Image 1 (tube, rainbow over the protein chains, first blue to last red):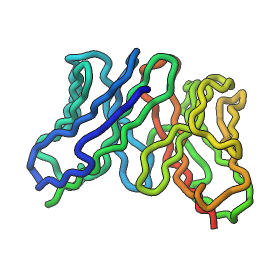
Image 2: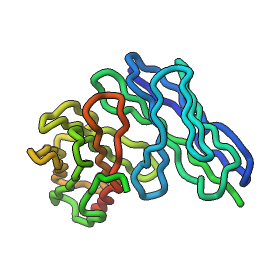
Image 3: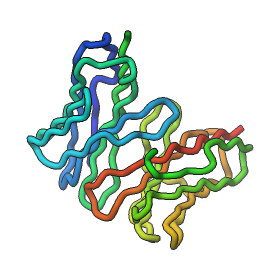
Image 4: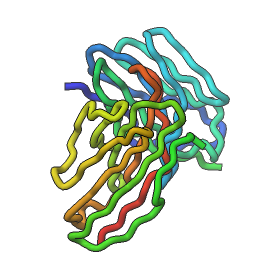
Length: 109
Length: 113
């Protein structure tokens, strides 16, 4: 069965304190791995798509990387406005998107 | 703005009633996905449509149904509502081809009283 797990469940950082979020997946036939940001009561906002091991994508303070079994979302010098739940999802051959439970990030000023 | 429009934004209804949630995908997107997110829970896949045809089904209750119309908008029908159906309902749309990102609407918050 396709599975996506994320760790940690919650993370509190001081402003400027860099860290990484983990997404581990057990799937066959990976078509893409996706990172989303979700604010409370809002729809998930697309951040990155990764397709193959070794691939990296960057956007402002965020950088996503992919290996054969996991992906990392690195947050460099975070600001309070980066506080949100970060969701990882995979899509496999002929299937829908499978989402992980998310990491709830709080960045304190 | 993701380009995906969901209406209504909020809906309050009584148990036993029926409601219809509407989703307009981004222009050109053929796939529409429906997800349910209960309080502090993850996104649960309900159903997917591709160009008017049902493509995949998740943990969708028999009381729930959906369809995608020729203009590609989609509707999710929820009937015989129960208190436990209170949740955020999201739709997402995706361009042709697997492995491309899906874009989400802002959701419909359903409260069953």
